[in-house]
Amino acid sequence: MDRRPRLAVWKFASCDGCQLSLLDCEDELLAVADALEIASFPEASSAVAAGPYDLSLVEGSITTAHDAERIREVRRQSRHLVTIGACATAGGVQALRNFASIGELVAAVYPSPQYIETLATSTPIAAHVAVDFELRGCPINKTQLLEVIGAFLAGRKPAVAAYSVCIECKRRGTVCVMVQGVPCLGPLTHAGCGALCPAYRRGCYGCYGPMETPNVPALAQRWQALGAPAKRFEHALRSFNAAAQGFQRE
Image 1: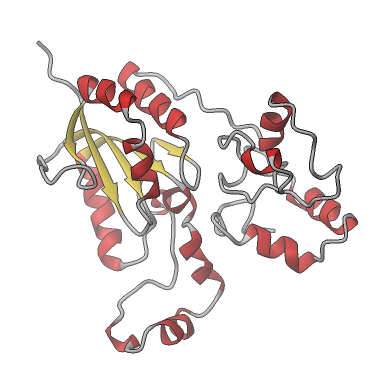
Image 2 (image 1 turned 30 degrees about the vertical axis):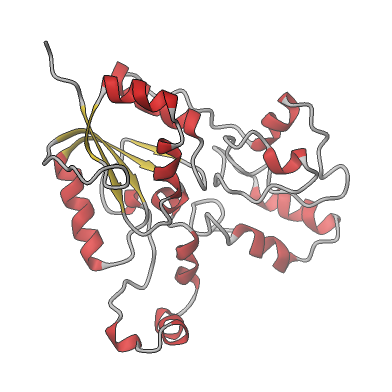
């Protein structure tokens, strides 16, 4: 019998939330374990098998020189490499450092900054190695994650939609919150959350990063028409996906 494909899950600078999304699959995880050999997943088991691996899921951003070298080694061991979550695909919340002086930030946070070794920026995995697919979200959607794993098992492209949260609002029958005067990032943001916040009359926070073709200047004008100052729009973009292309340019 042919061997099962080997899966590895890796963590870099992150909160572990996207790895927990895989564990949250619960019953579905049993089917994943039947179809794959989970060779390395320290969040779930201390048993770690050496590479190479058929599929690597990578959570977290690159923030140190050591991790920059480590991700190159992960790439060398991986036939396919998929990044999961805002940190791995856009640098994450920690990419806010990219807009300031790292020396000033380290001095403000740590009592002994002389012991801190870090890069001046927090960057996505794709800035360092070739990535086969990026799955967005903070955290990722477990259903989308299962689709990605299934797609690589079947040798096809993952069927993850690239449209905006607005489509999800329409599908669940949620009245547009911007029509009601609430500033929202939904028109710019990649779908995947099921339009959770607008369902409770809250503007989208952009957890899933920019959708395929975001028109950021147009939404900025709309926010201003609703009375939101330009600084508020800037702060809204500088959150989970601050360094994502599309958000950072604006």
